[in-house]
Length: 242
Image (tube, rainbow, N blue to C red; front, side, top):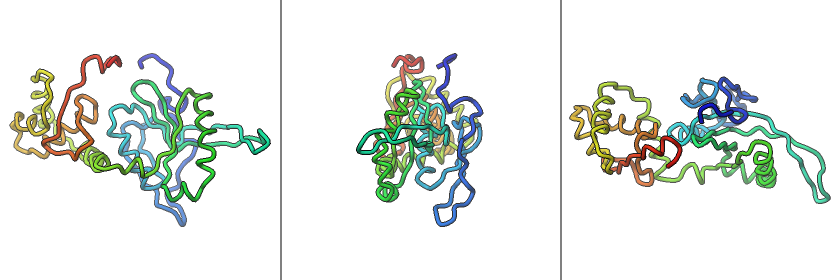
């Protein structure tokens, strides 16, 4: 998306319009999530554990370009049984900019809270219309029913952990093997075996890091292991055509 205008809330250095307090009396303890995709260039403060886990998903998803926490305050029309009756404001928990240029604004809400705060479902359609009309973007509410799907959640946790590993020598060995392949499907274990690198665990982590960056694709529908299938995106896919 070079040279194109970024959607609102994704400008470099954009700061959240709401700051999560370091401590919440009587509620879940917020946590700091290191981020390589935050538009502010800083880590993101997650208001609760479910939001932290969703941020892990976004950080290891190669289709996500930028993450913007609490990116804006929007105003939208409210209605009662007789018609329009005023306006209200909304601050989404997260803005997500995809590599294809599309944007999604969302709230991350535990199921128990969603059932307790019944108004969230009632206003969902209104917010979907507002974000589509004002920003050409989607709006969604995510709960643990989507975030905790297995084995994807365990795989995301593994990718998040292994994406912190840094071993330049192992990465060079892995890249050397991948660059020498003809593009046919293989497995993580096969790539690692061909590297000859003595620490297989570190070599596996390097392969997974390439999956996080989108240079290779792995199947997240099954638990990650050395038997996990590895495929290679076409050249056109990096140009946005495939």
